[in-house]
Length: 250
Image (cartoon, rainbow, N blue to C red; front, side, top):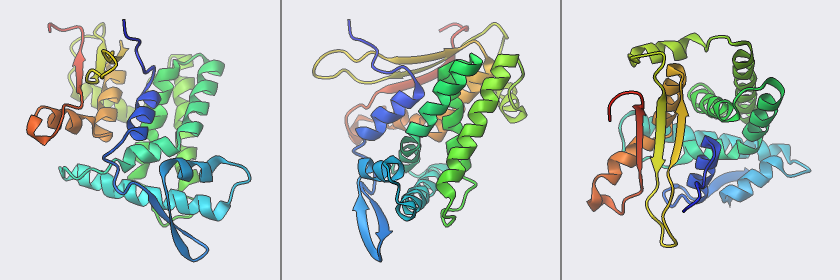
């Protein structure tokens, strides 16, 4: 039996970005010492986290990546098929920080780590629409926002508090049928040459979390991947994704 390769949304993003043939441009252009250099994603992330940190280079990496991600998000918002993958790439650049937040918050407050990971990822994606790529502190802005949202979510989970109002509104708008219902996000990759690929399935008994999973899929453009996968003349099948209320008849 094939093993499930992923345990969380951060694992999915890591796998998608590190194998992304669709990333355009494939390297990040940044200004260093008056010259433009092109960094691939591993080099860009090394510039953000390896010690000692070059503050000027770090700021340029974040600014360049955010500019590309905002262009990508705009293309997705207007229904363009020219999505470049840079929204996911920005999340991937933040992964060391996001993973640390999720581990610490879940360990200290008892929140589900996967739920915290979903929350911090969504925080990055949403904040991308609000920041300016010209702000030299834009990277730290994204990371601070994710940290604040992750810890707030973990505290609410620990205290039994309710999620923020806008997420509740989204859940209500989706007209969940029952509080006993649970939601399921399934990503099914195609079989590989070396064997069957097991699907990734994220479930929640919270209708609010179901809305969060749906919003995250929309933000990351996974629905468009599925849409394109149903048209074989566009290329080989990439996989399938479904988000449904698992408590209703299938």
